[in-house]
Amino acid sequence: MFRMFKKAVFPGKYVQGKGVIEGLPALLASLGDRGMVLASSSVIGRVLPRSGLVPEEHGIMVEPFRGECCEEELARLAGIMDEREVNVMVGMGGGKTIDAAKVAADRANVPVVVVPTIASTDAPTSGCAVLYTSEGAFASVLYQRTNPAAVLVDTSIIARAPVRFLVAGMGDALSTWFEARSCERTRSPNECGGLSTAAGIHIARLCYDTLLAHGEASKEACENGTVTPALEHIVEANILLSGLGFESAGLASAHSIHNGLTALEETHRYYHGEKVAFGVLAGLHLTKAVADMDTVYSFCEAVGLPTTLADVGLAGVEEERLMIAAEGACAPDQPIHHEEGTITSEKVLDAMLAADAMGRARKG
Image (cartoon, rainbow, N blue to C red; front, top):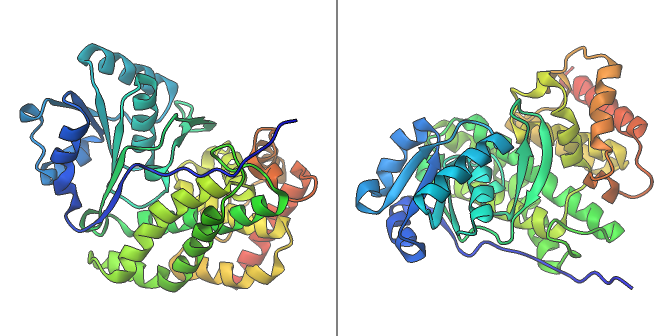
């Protein structure tokens, strides 16, 4: 008989604070001598010089990311890595850049160092990545053999990024506790193929408590481009606590609803965490978590996360099109089935409509 054991996974090293990017050259030297940095052109020009990493002096090549973590981009990167005999990868930038670097490194069997320049998702610490189509629709989740070898989070860089990224990261992190709670209740598997450990559950809860305690103040700090204790707390929640929490405690309805929403083109201009935040609210209605609704809606309103369908580009959308998202959320491989009871697309559609109605009513 198959037995499932408790399981948790972690990155090899996590370093956060002002100026930590300056440690990148020494870290890379300890992992390999033929490195490759994957980053957008803007990050290459703006952030990479601050690291002190001189590519031509350190045997490093720099490759611009082409914008989508899709099979076409991964095939392109694989060819470059093979030709240059790359033995350590650096993913520098946002979630899709980081995910592409993680998958490319895993397929080449080399270590990856992650340097996030925004705190918009928990992708930096995790051993899984989201694969999209070349058009930007959700395709699948890919699991790597190991988590990143190291994660360097320079809060002075993140503090100067647009505040919308930080807020979106709070939306992604907001799901961590509720999805972990659902998985614990139903003894569903987490994202590393085991049952939740006590550490995973408590980290997920700490993530939620940190958001409520420091979310508004961290937004103000980011608006002013300053690194404060509140900002440090939220960066840690968005990246480390959320990453450890979702991976070692599990996913459920919020991320499934996000995945379904990506099938609607109108949502593509909204960030992952923004759609996840609406998925959290819909998930509360789906699971009848009435006691949590006022707190979660109030938090979203305070920091500027979506609370209605209009907030994710779906104002006035027909129910027939929303059903496309609901059906996608309920695909057999989606973690929404970690929720209690039998979940159907009709129930998910009703939950999305209920979340939207409450959000609109609260806006007055």
